[in-house]
Image 1 (cartoon, one colour):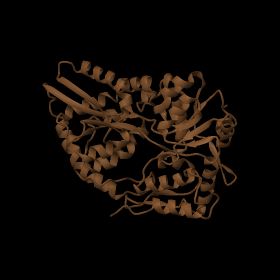
Image 2: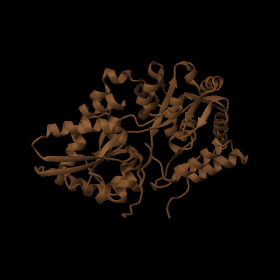
Image 3: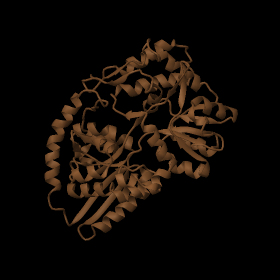
Image 4: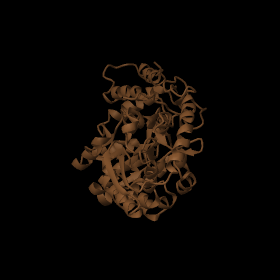
Length: 423
């Protein structure tokens, strides 16, 4: 088992970190190696390529692969194998055994620097072409110091609010209070995965409280326990308790959201585009989606924030068919493939032409993610963030059963987030 340290980068506006330096030193060698290898003449014999991606995307990807084989028919004997691998697990799976990892793998943007630092990614060969084809934010998320390391294909890896129009009006969904009132009155629920730091951030992101990465590129700074200011740490904690104790709210894993929709219990939920197809099937013309609501905190209405993100395909540096691996990754992320993915999975394209289509603009989930993006930021956090958020949110969701003083609770949260991960 290959042991590789996990690195992170700073939030936009913060200074450079050790991770960037490590990634640069590792990536520079890989850039030269990848460009040299991929510029060689493409093999004309048997070419076996393994692709790691979410199983839910296989139907669309099989169409892309068939189109790829038709495009390059006669140039090689292709055997392209799809293997199920969750995007959230890509970093662990690839760095755990780089030499046996897939030739091409899907991943969210927050894993990019770890994989560069681990020497796992062969940079994009046709840099200018891919950069020009995709929106600027997606290109930035897939790049390090102007070098593009992966092929963007989705610009919607964030979250927003789904709601059932049979119960909730456009006015209701502007505030969490409005949603909770309707849900409770109808003995229904709004669902949210509260104990994931990815979602918990939404309550802290627009409060003026601060969180980010230190210059060491490993540890976080956090003042979510601040005792001064318009919004204090205890104010957010109390607001969260008020929400979770409301009979119209349920804190549960995102994977259970659709189960509640199908049973009729859930009439609203915080989730992402991966559930758009299922929501459309269940709610039909009553399917609504919009930015996240505001919530009441210390007598004020605070707009909920979010982590935004992008998805991309990367090529394994150690692929035995590096040139063809790049060709395949490029093909599965081109305009045509992104259009297929949008039509079959309601995935928001990163390709400029595909994203500008009238069809994309009409999809409620895509419109919602665009509206919410103005209140979001790229996810760039140190490892200590996640467990601290889970522990805090579990206590909140349980109603603070030990009656811990809220200041102690947010102190533990902030100190846990800022804890050193260096052994």
